[in-house]
Image (cartoon, rainbow, N blue to C red; front, side, top):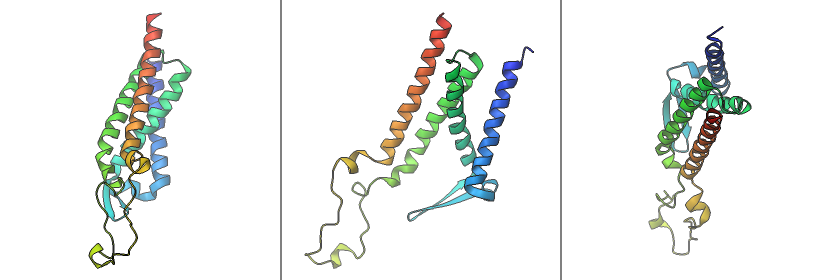
Length: 170
């Protein structure tokens, strides 16, 4: 019975994997098991390897599950805290990796708009169709939301490290 905590954590990781596959199958159907998943977003067409979706889902779900599970124990167990820390670092790395992918979702005031018909064919009395520069178009961008989400993940990891250090100090 010496390896009981290790066996429990292996079962938790296995259940997270099964949950990830079920959610992936529910969202994407049989295509989650194919070579790639095709996404069409606005005028951009993405082809993403299906294992990337499964890895991302696994890290996100496992991080949330381990946070909720270990909050119950006040982060005082060594192996689950180590797994939680690895998942948190992986989660922040995924957010860093996903930030450039969302650059195309910025509001068009920074990158320009394609306007049909072209401005050269419009009359001088045409209304101003460019977006207003304000708080929403400047600060509420998808990249800023990802940065805020990353700060929340790091804050949760710091909270867990504080609780684990406080337990080890006693």
